[in-house]
Length: 71
Image (tube, rainbow, N blue to C red; front, side, top):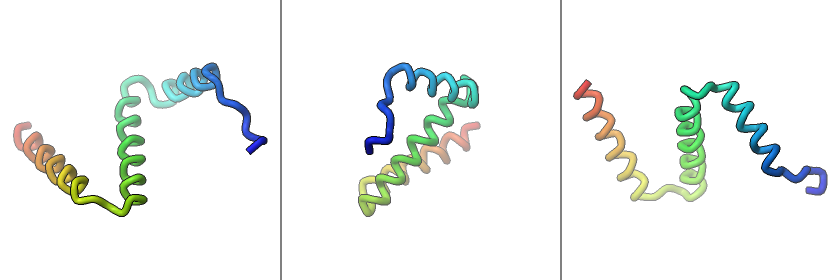
């Protein structure tokens, strides 16, 4: 791994500025949420699943249905 350069704070700031310019400040939270859910699903698939996660998904879908009926 000697060919990979060290990533410092300046490089991280530059990457964050580029991301904000590409997505814009309004869509950035939705993009971050999408990436977070992707990582969560990836970890979940590696772990082989869990009943607790299924319960969480069920309650989340129930909350989504309730919020849709209110609108």
